[in-house]
Length: 196
Image (cartoon, rainbow, N blue to C red; front, side, top):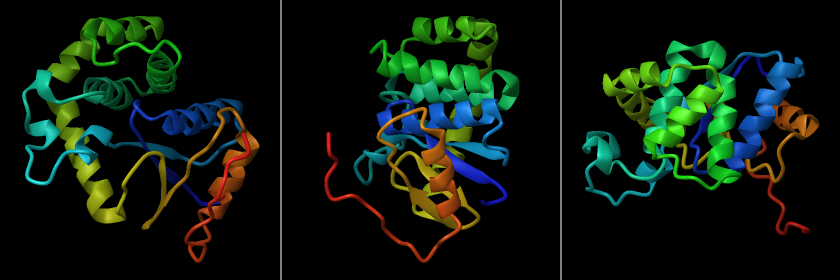
């Protein structure tokens, strides 16, 4: 088992949801006892055309799908860390269970309220521009340093591994996968078909 891990996320991805909800469960249950750093990554930015203005350099209303939710997640993570896992899980659920627009400020305010956060406080934190600057820095670092292309990517030291979990809540599978992160000589391990 590595000493710590870093895991990328974007609320748009159902596979990131599977991983992050399971990580939250494992951390809360004590099954995962190593430090976990949640590293923001924008799939919207990842799908921009070369030469396009990066999403973080665009006006707030023109940044694209999921970006505002990432800003809110970063604001909570960096300023109210004790509430982050709750907000994180609820934001994923809003996107994937409720199928609501997580770029809608009222939706984000309701998620914050459900997590006993003051939505006005989070909104003010986002308005400072710090969360979008953090998203830019974390996304660029993920791409430049670890060649990250998607979420969830698990990072141990300088090794990065994209893992697609097909279900959430399976803590034993999560722990087995994390143990394999310390095996850099395995480059690719992928089922050719999913029996479903």
